[in-house]
Structures are given as C-alpha cells and as structure tokens.
Length: 255
Image (cartoon, rainbow, N blue to C red; front, side, top):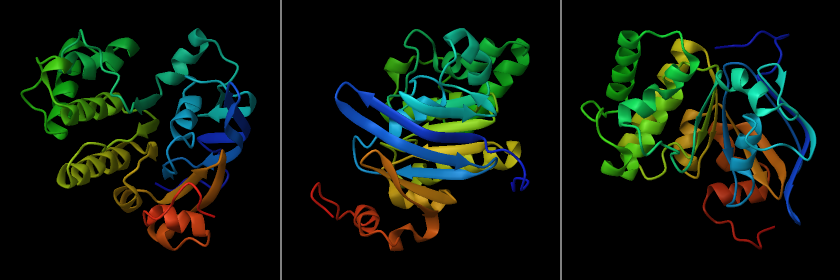
C-alpha cells in the first residue's frame, strides 16, 4: 500500500529521550513511519528497541520529546485516555504476555471482547480462522501452560492481528521458531497487511528473515538511530558498525 504524499505519518517521534535511572536508553530519536509501511528495527542487545515499541503504545512515557501515533499524542495521556488509541494498535510482546487463566481461544479473542460490538458467533469464527492461519487449529481449549514456547508465540501473533488493527508492533515475532515456521509467520503478517493496509513495525534479532520481510530497516545503537535504509541492502550499509552487526561481527568495542 502506498501512502499519499501529503498523508501524515502513522508514527512520528521527535527528539524522544528515555532514561532508566542513570542509564540513558534513547537519546534523541527522530522517526517517521508512513501508512502501510513495513519497518524493521535492529540493533545490539539493550539498545532500546523494546522500549521504543512500548513508547508507541503508551506503556512507557518519554522523558523528553513527542510521540504521535495514528495522529494522536501519546506521551501525556492517562491510561483511560489511551484505551481508544490502543484499540487501534496490535502488539506482540517478546515474553508472550498471555493470560494464564484464559484458554488459547480466550487469549486470541480478548481484543475483540474488549472492543465490544462483535457477536459471539462472529467472534468465535474470527478466532478459529486466526488459529488456523498460525497452525494452531485444535488448540482452542488448551491453557498457555499446556503449550510450547513456539506455540505461545503463534498465539500472541493471532491475538495481535485478530482485530485487524491499523498499526502492528512486533517484538521478536519469530524468536524460538524454526526457519520454516518463521517464513510462514512473516507470510501471514504480509497477507494481513495486504488485506487491511495496516502499518507494521517489527523488532527482530533474526536480521536475515526480517530484511526479507521489511521494506526499510533502522539500526538503533547507543540510544540513537544510526542508520535507516532499504532492508534489501542493509548488509552493504555505508556505516561499518551496521555492516558488522548484520554480518554477526559486531563486538562491544567495534568502531
């Protein structure tokens, strides 16, 4: 999907800073993401990638700067005021964040029940369709404690996409999955995007798989966005540190 030239960005961060105690995590982030885009975020461990995603849905607040998502300011809103905006965002958490007391079907259907307006028959049909899409048909009545880590990841993806949100945030969507399942998950995300026109932002340590899916990649390092460019050519980025990271050669002392 191609955004109109004058269409405002879905995500706009300007001068965003975030610290935890004495540790600066983000030190002045400027980032815009167009509607319908596929952006991948890569970078070393503890670079602030997950924190950036949490800022976008209001789970963290910036210490300075502004965060706008879907045309609305995020940073200064109360939890109650954030609820309508969060209903337009789907997020897959790195640690799954499934409700232990709900079945697989209950977890996937949770966003639809929260939003309301969907009758039970339609809700159940959409949940079943999502579970089939991620290869979990027949697991509807299992609890999270009864399924593997890889299956939990797929439940999380089904839950993030079931309500067809405008913006999808994925934190390590394929961690722990084998290469075949990884490819299938990205195919599913791409198919969802084609059907809904949503915008996708994904953080992943699997740079090869992410680069095959994303249109653009940004490299987050030292609290700053050090690189932004086409995903297909990130291995040949002009910045030596980006190239070293993509090729698995980066060490803490790399220049």
